[in-house]
Amino acid sequence: MSRQPILSCRNIVVDFDGFKAIQGVDLTIEEGEIRFLIGPNGAGKTTMLDVICGKTRALSGQIWFHNRIDIVKKQEHEIVNLGIARKFQAPSIFLNLTVFENLELAMKQNRHLWAVLRARIDSGQRKRMMEVLAQIGLADQAERKAGLLSHGQKQWLEIGMQLMQEPKLLLLDEPIAGMTGTERERTGELIREIAQTCSVIVVEHDMDFVRTFSKQVTVMHEGKILCEGTMEQVQRDPRVAEVYLGK
Ligand code: ADP
Image (cartoon, rainbow, N blue to C red; front, side, top):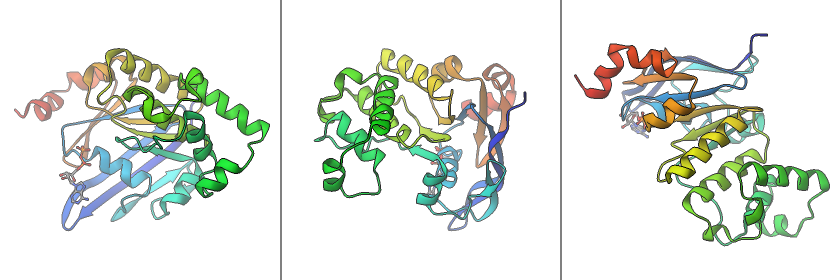
């Protein structure tokens, strides 16, 4: 059975005061797909994630979610509510709260902090928290203050916070930056697990990581898509070597 597109970006243009950072990008992501977005610095990768999650406005183009809803003009919170989650490079977890409390906050993100920590969680919510804790490998750290976690664990906790809302599409910007080799490996496995229920777009610079964990790769350059395919296919494309090596 062929998979349905979860996201179809059509002819996206982003203009920053006359500078076209994105110049007519078409990008289609299928359900359950892990898509790596690569390309040299300044190619427009992060800007594409920003447009998808509503942080940056496109000058023109459409972004169809589930082939039904054009999200290109929607507000960030509306896009989150539709099931698109974004993890930024720097973790934005609460260091003085425990791992469990951070997940609780993410689950009840519309309430005030004091209300969240006083409100009871029901059995369904507890079950979801336990599932996410296990998935991010922090089940034995639930009562630990987030500030005491390793760098990798903090990143996983933030991914876990995004997973609490059961997103359908997760956007990750350089998720393994600053991680040890073991943490990178674990993060790759986590992304594969997440993709069982959710499509993932990953912006990544580490080519070894991309080689190990990618199926489909999109190469961007100067605000356009240069080519798409498996890592093997795109590596054979002479234009890719050219933009990376600056020949
Ligand atoms: P990448 O993630 O591929 O390194 P970016 O998407 O961050 O590239 O940036 C693409 C281009 O857009 C770069 O030339 C960058 O300087 C420019 N850019 C990004 N954000 C802004 C902004 N807010 N204002 C002006 N220019 C920006």
